[in-house]
Each structure stands twice: as C-alpha cells, then as structure tokens.
Amino acid sequence: MVSHTSKTQNPAQPVRVSPWLVTLYLVAHVGLDAVSYVQPVLKLGITPLSPQTGLVLAFLYASRGNFWWVAAAFLVSEIIIRGIPMHVWILPLQAVSITVVYQFAAWLLRTRVPMDGVATLSGTLKFIATAAATAITAGTVSIGLYTLASLIPSEQFSSALARFWVGDLNGILLLTPLLLRFADTPLLLRAIVARPVAFIGVLFGLFAAFTLVFLVGNPGDLRFFYLFFVPAISAALIWGVPGFLLAALALQISLVAGVQRLSEVAALVDLQFLISTLLVTGLALGAVVTERENSARLALQREKQLRDSQANLARASRAATTGELASTLAHELNQPMTALVSYLRASEIMISDGNLHDARLAPTLRKAADEALRASDILRRLRNFYAGRDPQLESLDLPPIIEKLVEALRRSDRIGIESIVLRIDPALPAVTGDRVFIEVILSNLLANALEATAERSNALIEIAAARSERAICLSVDDNGRGMSEQARRDLFKAFVTSKTDGLGVGLAVSRSLAEACGGELRLAESSLGGAKFELVLPIDSVRNESP
Ligand code: ADP
Image (tube, rainbow, N blue to C red; front, top):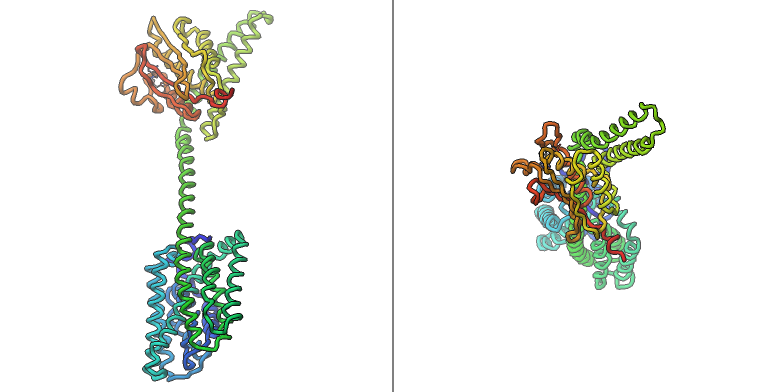
C-alpha cells in the first residue's frame, strides 16, 4: 500500500506556471480530447469519455487560476478536433462558462477538500461529490447552450446531458487525483516492486477481463464487465488509492482501445456508467485502506518519536546534570584520592627512614595502586553514565563488596570497630548491578552515616542485607542526628546540603546510579533513631534460578 504524504501537494504553494508548463498543458488537453473523441453526439464534443476534464481541474487546482489558458485550451481543442460546426459565438461562450465552473470547483477543492483528502474516506467522498456536481453543472451549461443554439433537439437534452456528465465525471475521478498525487509515484512503484506477484495478478486480471469483454463476447456485450472489478478492487485493497488509480487508468486506456470494436453509441455510455461505479467504489475502498495504513504508520511514527523523546529526555536530564559531573567527581573521588595520598605518604615515610626493604612498603604501595585504579574506574563509569551509555550490569555478590568498604572504613580510623554492625543474610542471592555504581552508592551512604554520628560517643551504624520478594534490600541505618521534615523533602535534590563543606550531590547521584542498575534508593524509618536508607537491587534471576 502507498502512503500519502502531505508534502506532495500543498495548496498553500501554487505551482509556478512557466511557458513550458502551459505548452505542455495545452498539448495534453488537445491530445486527451482527441484520443477520447469517440461516439460523439451529432459531431459535438458530447462524448462519454472526457479525460481532459481531470487535467483541467488538476491544472486549475495546482496553478490557482490561469483561467484564460484553460478557456483557451477548451476553445483551441474544440476548433482543432471538431472544427466549427456551430455558431461562432457559442464556442468562446461555452469555453468561458465551462472554465468558470471548473475554476469554482478547483477553488472548492482547494479550500474544502485539499488533495491530501483523497487519503481519507470522508475527503474522498467529498471529492466524489464535488466531481459529480461539477460535471452536472458543466454539462447543463454546455448542453443548454447547444440546445439554445438549436444544435441539438431539446428532446435529446437529457440523454446528451447523461453522456456529457458521465464522461466529465470519470475524467475528474480518474485523472485529477492521479495528476495531483503524481509525486506519490516513486512510493507507488516501490510498493508495487515489493508485491510483484500481486502486481502480475492484477495485470493478468485486467487482461483476462478485457479479453472476455471485448474479444470473446459480442462487441458491446457488457455481461462480463463486472470482471474488471476483481483486479481493480484488488489493487485498491493492496496499494490503496494510488494503486487503484493506476489500475483504473490501465482499464480506461484499454477501454478506449476496445471501444473501437463497439459499434453502438449506447454501449460506451453504459460502459462509462459502469466505470464510474467502479471508480467510486475503488476510490472509497482505496481511501479506507490508505487511511488505515496511514494511521498505522502514524501510530508507529508516534511510538518511535515517543521512544526517541524519552531517550532524549533521559539524556537531557543527564546532560542537565553534566554541570554536576565536576561536583560529583570531586565528591566520589575524594575518598579514593585521600586514601591514595595517605598510602603514598606512609610509603614516603618508610623510604625516608632509609629502609627500602621495609616489609610494609610493598603492600602499602599495592594499596595505593588499588585506590588509584578505583579512582580511575569511578571516573570512567561516571563519565559513561553521564554520556548516556548503559551501565555495566553483571551478576554480583553483595557481601564481599560490603565487607571491602567496611574494612576500608575501619582502617581509616574514622570509626571504632564496634560501631559498625553487619547483618547480612548468609543465603543472600546474587544481584544484578554495576559494581562501581553500587560501591559509590554504598560509600556515600556510609560517609553520610559517619558524618551524622560523628558527635556521638555511642555511634552506631547498622548495615543489613536481606531478600525481599524478587529484590535484595541493602540498608544503612544510624543513630545519628537524623533529619528535619524539610531535609527529608529535599533529600534527593542535587546541591541541597546541611554540611558546611558538603556538595549535596551524593544522594542525588546515588539515586540515579541505583535506577541505572534497575533498582531504587529510598529513605526508610530508622530503627536506631537516626536516618536509614534502603538500596533495593534486582535479584539475578538467571544465576539464582538455575539449578
Ligand atoms: P552531602 O553529603 O554532600 O551534603 P548528600 O546528597 O549525600 O550530600 O546529602 C544531602 C543531605 O542529606 C546532607 O547534607 C544531610 O543533611 C542529609 N543526610 C544524608 N544522609 C544523612 C544521615 N545519615 N543522617 C542525617 N542527615 C543525612
């Protein structure tokens, strides 16, 4: 199926009429009139086939006016093809009055049913109604003039009008959207190439119907005409409006050729009425298909846009905190850097004693190197996180991570051994998360707890880890000063701190890191009287559920 794009014909931008375009238009108008001048009534231009009307409407619609070129085309065509079989004054009068009717129709379409409308059912029905009204008005004006000039007997008025009407109607229904949606052709061709079997089937169907109607049956025998419905309607169902129009064009061309075999005037008129039924049915059906496919495509596009904008939003919100990156780095690197410096200082002291073989030197330098590596790891992971790259999720056992951090804390002499209590479920399942992120979160929570309990003589920090449903809850509780209602509300906002030397980014960053691991960081009710934070991480289902 082929989607209509609104850019193809924007009524706000009229096509510039160059001398080339006018010449092309005039030649096409006369040419179409000439090839369709079959079975006329009394050698007047009353034929049941008038493809030029579709061209006229498309030209007036796209060029916004050019009234006189169109009137001239009607006049020139009349003179070249039919000579002057009537009073000279009727010719220009008829050309001008028909042009007025078409000019009005073009204005109506442009303002009420822009050609993008044929991609929807309601737009298509409005287009069909406009075409029918235009054809009947143009017919009444023309036949009325012929009757007034006594060129046709008045009793032939209605039959001539019917013939004129159906010819004009079919011309408009077929050619106007085909020409105005010409820009859709590459899309249509691509859609056809994508369904070659269907295309061959439609072609074969048209050929088979043509053979039966014109070659096998008696000429003029329309019993088999309904067979044309099968390929034409199939094209509408497969490729929407453009596909149907192409099939209908092939049908109309083959009919012009086939009609040479029809001797009776009535036969072609009947055929044209059948074709208008086919055109109306096919256009409406094609519009339903096109509309449905367009809305499906639109829904897909919206979904993609939504996904893109969500990703952009996530990136933007990280980018917005890019300013925080420097602060965050300063915050997170502070601890490993301080440790690194103190290990190096200790090594320096050892060497300054002149004792290069001090047994403590090698392990101290190794620890310094470990801290330097940890700092660079933090740097790299945080940079990736702010750049919007995914965290490195892996299966992790929490106890060793917790123990390593607590060990470092105890070694730092910032807190007594008895002040830190670990309550870790021995059967703790593994979690998924980014190791460095979890380390950063935990060391932030511990640093805050240390700071909050610093003034207490009986400082207590409890670290617990237990399973809760499909997640692991790791909590850090303390008996520190706790926090006010206001502090609780602003807790995870960046740059909110109660400390004189605090940056207020630790918790905000920790929460983002927890979410990046698919978990969450929240404040809980402290059972020690201070503050308690809970880090919830998803259980590694693969490792824990495999036998
Ligand atoms: P910073 O530590 O740089 O101030 P954080 O985002 O880590 O930034 O903390 C923000 C604020 O939350 C702290 O300034 C402090 O007021 C409060 N806070 C965090 N943890 C605790 C705690 N365990 N006890 C009391 N207050 C806390």
